[in-house]
Amino acid sequence: MIKGLIAPILTPFDDHLTVDQEKFNVLAHRLLSSGCAGLAPFGTTGEALSVGSAERKTALEGLVKVGVNPAVLIPGTGLCNLPDTVELCRHAIELGCAGVMTLPPFYYKGMNDQGLFDYFVRLIETINDYRLKIYLYHIPQVSGVGLPIPLVTRLHNKFPEVVVGIKDSSGDWENTKALLEIDGLIVYPGAELPVIEAIRLGAPGCISATANLNSARIAEVISLCHAGQWEAAEAKQKSVCSIRKLFQEYAPIPAQKALLARQLEQPSWGNLRPPLQPITTERVEALAESLDRQFGLKF
Image (cartoon, rainbow, N blue to C red; front, side):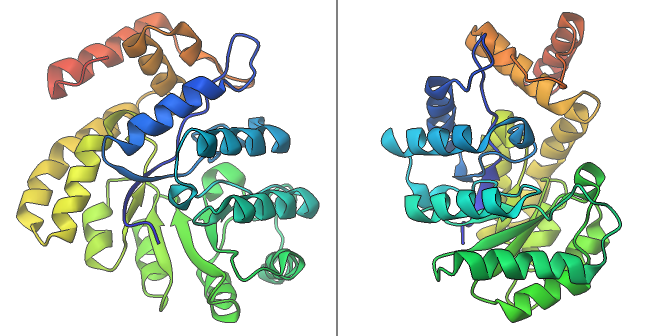
């Protein structure tokens, strides 16, 4: 289990829209040296479903080659087809990753819990490796297919050493609380907004998109919680939440990439694979000005 802040690291593309390994490596080291306890490559923020399986494997191998400890990595592996999901999970296991973050198969909508249960059973039994640690990924507003509490409970109870946790990006605090009540399940909220209350209830931290740009402040809140300094954490959390809410007024992936491009003076950081589109220069400048004026964050 990774205790602390995990960043769903952005995926950089060069001007040919090929994964830029060098920039990926640099950002990974930057995040790990500025408060992040772990990285979750190829999640929603990392444009996972726009990145091919071979590209994902090459990029992860590239991180390990430049000294990123695979034990801090929880890469996304969830695809709609079982063979490629198996392949990505096995690759992560062989690299030594801490676990994998796996979506339910999301193309066919309206499937009952039994169908989703059968999918994960087949995935786990096909891989058949005691080293497999699955963190389910619940983001129904994007995937269109959620993971109901009874299904999560059933999977965890059947495979307690394999289905070890979940990232809850639903934004529904009542759902997160219900997950935290499942005995032995590791629960990461998918944002920093509820992280203090989540840690009070047993969460180890959170996985937050804004960690790509605000890792130090979020990590400080989490560290204060684990040290039992709740009042100090709540005081720091006010600005952290305000920053998060400001980002929510913009298209989050294009906005974060544009700010990195501006801060690092590397225009290609703004590149996105379609269908995502960049935000306007005016919007980027307005966001950068607000972050500087209100919070002292320079981009």
